[in-house]
Length: 399
Image (cartoon, rainbow, N blue to C red; front, side, top):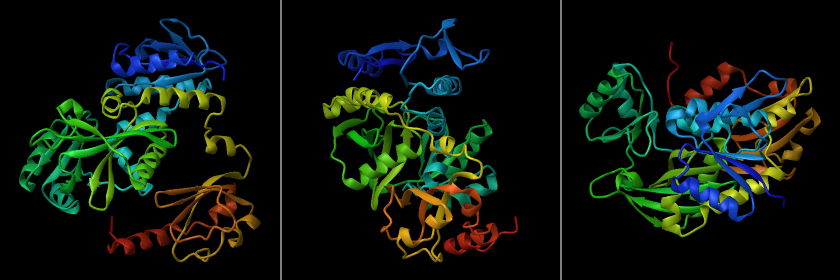
C-alpha cells in the first residue's frame, strides 16, 4: 500500500504515547506530523471546508489521529469535525470523543444498547439523593464527577450519610455527579482493554495499591497482562464501536456475572499497557489506520437517507410481535421494501443476517427502506410506555 500522510493531533509531542505512535508510523514508511491541536484555525469562508495551522492553509492529509485532552474537548472535537468535513479519515469520530468525555452521556448511550454496567443514577434535587442511593443498592456507593479523569473525582462513600454530605458539597460548587453501585467483588481491580477496530489488541489488569479502591496507574496501581475471555472481549469491542471510537481503552470491572463497563476512553495512554503486555500497540493502531484510509467506514445514516421517502431506522422485535419465532425471510420485511442491514441481539451483532435467521423477542434490526412502512411497524408511544413500566413492575407516574 502507498504511504499514508498522517497528522497526530497532540499538545504533548514528547509524551510516551505520541512518540510511540510517531515512531510506529515512521517505521512503516508513512509521512507523519505531530500538530498542536490548539494551533488550528477552522476556516469556513470558502466554498470548501478548510483548516489553517499556525495561520497558514493546512496541507492535504490522508488521516488524522486525535489525542485530545480533557481540557480542550470542545475545541479539539471541532477540529476533528472539520477534518471529517474535509473527508480526512479519523479512527475516532468527533461525536465519539465528545460522548465519551461526558460520563452521563456515555452511560446513557451504552445503557441504551444493553452494555452491562454497574447500576447508575443521576439526580439534582437534594430530596432525590437518598432514594437514588437505595436504587443502586445502598452504601457503600461510588460518587463520580461527570468530567473526572485518571481516578480524580471518583469517591467511595461508606455510608448513606457520608454519600449525602459529599453529593451536597459537590453540587453546591456546581459539580454534577453520578451515583453508582460499588462492585465489591472487584474492589481495587479492573481490566483495561485496548480496542483497535473490531478486536482487542492488548489487555491488562490494574491492581490498586494498599487500601486504595481506584486502580489507575496514575494513582500508583500496578499492572499485569491478562488474557480476556470471549465475553469480556466482545463487550469491550461493542462498547467502543457504540461510542463511535475505533481506538479506545475500555475499562471494565470483573463482576460476579461477568464484565461491568466503567468507562470508554478516547485517548488511552500506551505506556502502561505496552509495558505490561510487551505488545506493539502503537503499531497496531497505525496498521489499522493504514488499512482504513483505503477503505474507510462511512456514516450509513447520512449516505442512505438521500432518497426521498427512504431512510435508516431501527425496528425492535417486541416480545408480542408476530415476527418472533419466524425466519427473517418469512417476516414480510422484504415484501415491504425493507432491507435488514444488521441484527443486534444483546451484545451480539449479526451483520447482513441471512433469511434463515430466526428472530427473537427484543432483537433490534437496523434497516434501510421505506420510512412510512417502517413507521407503521413501531408501536404507539402509550403502548410502549405501559410495556416498559410493566417490565419494571412500576405504576404509571402522573408527571
